[in-house]
Image 1 (cartoon, rainbow, N blue to C red):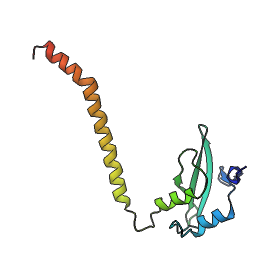
Image 2: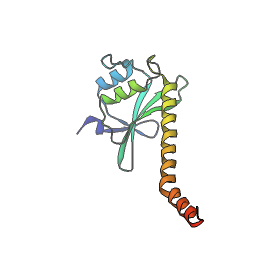
Image 3: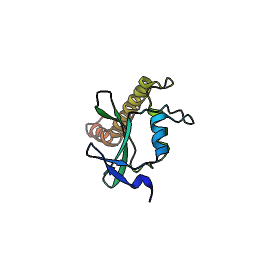
Image 4: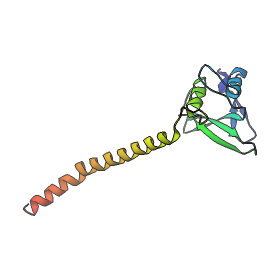
Length: 138
Protein backbone atom coordinates (compact mmCIF):
# COMPACT_ATOMS: atom_id res chain seq x y z
CA UNK A 1 0.00 0.00 0.00
CA UNK A 2 1.24 3.45 -0.92
CA UNK A 3 2.03 5.53 2.17
CA UNK A 4 -0.10 8.38 0.78
CA UNK A 5 -3.11 6.05 1.03
CA UNK A 6 -2.84 6.08 4.84
CA UNK A 7 -4.97 8.90 6.23
CA UNK A 8 -4.55 10.46 9.63
CA UNK A 9 -7.35 12.57 11.15
CA UNK A 10 -6.26 16.16 11.68
CA UNK A 11 -7.33 18.91 14.06
CA UNK A 12 -9.58 20.54 11.44
CA UNK A 13 -12.01 17.66 10.94
CA UNK A 14 -10.36 16.44 7.73
CA UNK A 15 -7.65 13.96 6.98
CA UNK A 16 -3.96 14.37 6.32
CA UNK A 17 -2.20 11.81 4.16
CA UNK A 18 0.73 10.04 5.73
CA UNK A 19 3.66 11.28 3.63
CA UNK A 20 7.37 10.74 3.69
CA UNK A 21 9.61 13.00 5.73
CA UNK A 22 11.53 13.76 2.52
CA UNK A 23 8.39 15.09 0.83
CA UNK A 24 7.49 17.25 3.84
CA UNK A 25 11.04 18.58 3.97
CA UNK A 26 10.76 19.60 0.32
CA UNK A 27 7.33 21.12 0.95
CA UNK A 28 8.54 23.18 3.91
CA UNK A 29 12.16 23.90 3.00
CA UNK A 30 12.05 23.88 -0.80
CA UNK A 31 13.38 21.89 -3.72
CA UNK A 32 15.86 23.74 -5.90
CA UNK A 33 15.60 21.18 -8.71
CA UNK A 34 12.12 22.48 -9.58
CA UNK A 35 12.45 26.03 -8.28
CA UNK A 36 10.21 25.54 -5.24
CA UNK A 37 11.28 27.84 -2.39
CA UNK A 38 9.31 26.01 0.31
CA UNK A 39 6.97 27.29 2.99
CA UNK A 40 6.97 26.02 6.59
CA UNK A 41 3.31 27.06 7.04
CA UNK A 42 1.91 24.61 4.49
CA UNK A 43 -0.03 21.44 5.24
CA UNK A 44 -1.70 18.79 3.08
CA UNK A 45 -5.26 17.52 3.45
CA UNK A 46 -7.28 15.12 1.34
CA UNK A 47 -10.95 14.41 0.79
CA UNK A 48 -13.14 12.31 -1.46
CA UNK A 49 -16.08 13.56 -3.48
CA UNK A 50 -18.08 11.58 -6.00
CA UNK A 51 -15.66 8.67 -5.82
CA UNK A 52 -12.67 10.88 -6.62
CA UNK A 53 -9.81 11.84 -4.33
CA UNK A 54 -8.59 15.42 -4.12
CA UNK A 55 -5.47 16.81 -2.44
CA UNK A 56 -5.54 20.24 -0.88
CA UNK A 57 -2.63 22.42 0.13
CA UNK A 58 -3.42 24.73 3.05
CA UNK A 59 -1.47 27.68 4.41
CA UNK A 60 -1.57 28.81 8.03
CA UNK A 61 -1.18 32.56 8.45
CA UNK A 62 0.59 34.14 11.40
CA UNK A 63 -2.79 34.76 13.10
CA UNK A 64 -3.49 31.00 12.94
CA UNK A 65 -6.17 31.16 10.26
CA UNK A 66 -5.85 28.51 7.55
CA UNK A 67 -6.80 29.03 3.94
CA UNK A 68 -6.72 26.71 0.97
CA UNK A 69 -4.23 27.70 -1.71
CA UNK A 70 -4.39 24.74 -4.09
CA UNK A 71 -6.74 21.86 -4.89
CA UNK A 72 -5.64 19.05 -7.15
CA UNK A 73 -7.61 17.80 -10.14
CA UNK A 74 -9.62 14.61 -9.41
CA UNK A 75 -7.47 11.56 -8.64
CA UNK A 76 -4.24 13.51 -9.13
CA UNK A 77 -1.31 11.33 -8.05
CA UNK A 78 0.27 12.17 -4.73
CA UNK A 79 3.92 12.64 -5.56
CA UNK A 80 6.48 15.29 -6.52
CA UNK A 81 4.08 16.67 -9.14
CA UNK A 82 2.21 18.39 -6.31
CA UNK A 83 5.33 20.45 -5.65
CA UNK A 84 5.58 21.32 -9.34
CA UNK A 85 1.95 22.52 -9.27
CA UNK A 86 2.69 24.61 -6.19
CA UNK A 87 5.74 26.07 -7.87
CA UNK A 88 3.64 27.11 -10.88
CA UNK A 89 1.06 28.76 -8.63
CA UNK A 90 3.58 30.47 -6.33
CA UNK A 91 2.93 34.23 -6.39
CA UNK A 92 6.29 34.91 -4.71
CA UNK A 93 8.02 34.13 -8.00
CA UNK A 94 8.86 37.25 -10.01
CA UNK A 95 8.48 35.54 -13.39
CA UNK A 96 4.73 35.08 -12.96
CA UNK A 97 2.35 37.78 -14.20
CA UNK A 98 -0.88 36.96 -12.35
CA UNK A 99 -2.75 39.90 -13.93
CA UNK A 100 -1.91 38.69 -17.45
CA UNK A 101 -3.02 35.16 -16.55
CA UNK A 102 -6.36 36.43 -15.24
CA UNK A 103 -6.91 38.63 -18.29
CA UNK A 104 -6.07 35.75 -20.66
CA UNK A 105 -8.45 33.46 -18.75
CA UNK A 106 -11.23 36.07 -18.92
CA UNK A 107 -10.60 36.64 -22.65
CA UNK A 108 -10.91 32.89 -23.25
CA UNK A 109 -14.19 32.78 -21.30
CA UNK A 110 -15.58 35.66 -23.38
CA UNK A 111 -14.47 34.00 -26.63
CA UNK A 112 -16.09 30.72 -25.57
CA UNK A 113 -19.35 32.53 -24.73
CA UNK A 114 -19.32 34.34 -28.10
CA UNK A 115 -18.65 31.08 -29.94
CA UNK A 116 -21.54 29.40 -28.09
CA UNK A 117 -23.83 32.33 -28.95
CA UNK A 118 -22.77 32.26 -32.61
CA UNK A 119 -23.38 28.51 -32.75
CA UNK A 120 -26.83 28.96 -31.18
CA UNK A 121 -27.71 31.64 -33.74
CA UNK A 122 -26.44 29.53 -36.64
CA UNK A 123 -28.20 26.34 -35.54
CA UNK A 124 -31.35 27.61 -33.81
CA UNK A 125 -32.24 31.13 -34.88
CA UNK A 126 -31.02 31.35 -38.50
CA UNK A 127 -33.27 28.58 -39.90
CA UNK A 128 -36.29 30.06 -38.13
CA UNK A 129 -35.51 33.54 -39.42
CA UNK A 130 -35.04 32.26 -42.97
CA UNK A 131 -38.36 30.41 -42.78
CA UNK A 132 -40.16 33.50 -41.45
CA UNK A 133 -38.66 35.71 -44.17
CA UNK A 134 -39.65 33.24 -46.92
CA UNK A 135 -43.15 32.99 -45.45
CA UNK A 136 -43.51 36.79 -45.51
CA UNK A 137 -42.28 36.93 -49.09
CA UNK A 138 -38.83 38.41 -48.62
